[in-house]
Image (tube, rainbow, N blue to C red; front, side, top):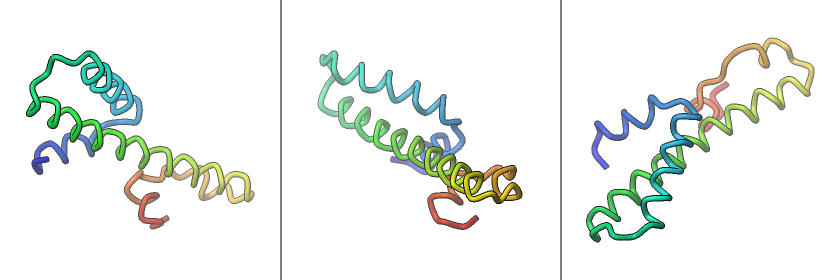
Length: 88
């Protein structure tokens, strides 16, 4: 995947990445794509799935902070990249 594509995926919200991932999966399941197209779709799907996971990890950290009674952490938005690295 190119740096441009990685930057594109990194800028997506959870909902955008999830919706596009559903489209990619549907396209792969329909078949009919060439091997090269299928590989490109697969790579895009992997990147989108990773982006969704980043967002979900950030959400989990915010929920854990809220449950722990630390309103300062729960009210701050945790970027998915920070959550994935444990930077918050």
